[in-house]
Image (tube, rainbow, N blue to C red):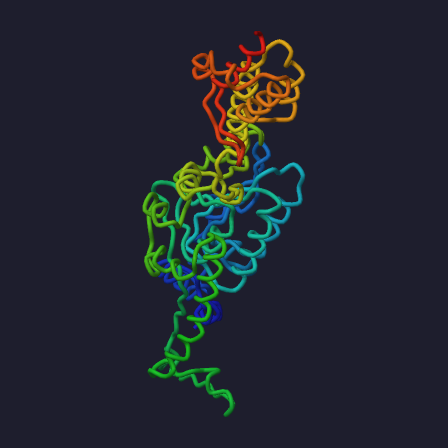
Length: 410
């Protein structure tokens, strides 16, 4: 059995089943020159080189994903996380690059290296805007990478999901050469080579892939800003979702095209609404912002708006001004020749109309004006100012005040 196949079969994969089968089939024929020849040309079609368009760096993430560059990446059009990390870091550090697009068309790949690359992308999105575009397949490990970007844009025919881990095991039997293969492990390490032909052995392998899946799910949840328990359902429990269904399930943020996305990111920041900070204070506003494709990182949650304090103060000032005008007018209505000083003092000291009337009444008494003389002209005062009771003072009405005025004139 070829060494390449043994190495491939021993790895845990974050990859679509059919693609994994194809990859293992290629690995099994790796010693056959014809097998390699049939794969030539894919690298030209799926170039891994970064292209810069109007300040937007486009980084292809295509084919099966490996940790390191190898014969698969050199001949079969695959990708390595090692090369991707180098390309993305260069784009982040290059001052000519203002945004990055991860152009994804990959069924996933080997689990090793995916987490580190995704964490680097997640950290880098605070440095520059990074958008993942799924034009073909963004499955399993490739989706993990996509989830780390600021935003996921998917084509109407794009495929996203397959959130899970798989290990393909091969049970050795009688080989074509007539030799049988044996593996002997030390007595304290029986789980180093669990017997997968038994229930116990398969359970032991399942523990490992379940632990890997827990990391996968938790990181996708962090990247998307959702609870971890929601991720399996969003991804149809290891299944796939297409285009609009992926957006509806929360696996992608919106439908779009690669060219449209590049044009959008190439616009100056001031003219690109997705680069502006948007403040929201209600769930409805948040949903509307996300539906419009606003970058979640550019959304600022604020407290629900309180009543307009300024408006309330203005209204209060208006009411206060009206009350003050009424008070002054009421006091001035009591004025008569010879009482100007008392009227002015009442206005300046803030006396109410009723208190001012009482003060003027007492002033009239001090000048020898009797109550009997006041009562002759009471009807005019009734129309201008209502009577009031102030503390324990004698009851007095504005009619009495006008009567007092009349008496003073006499």
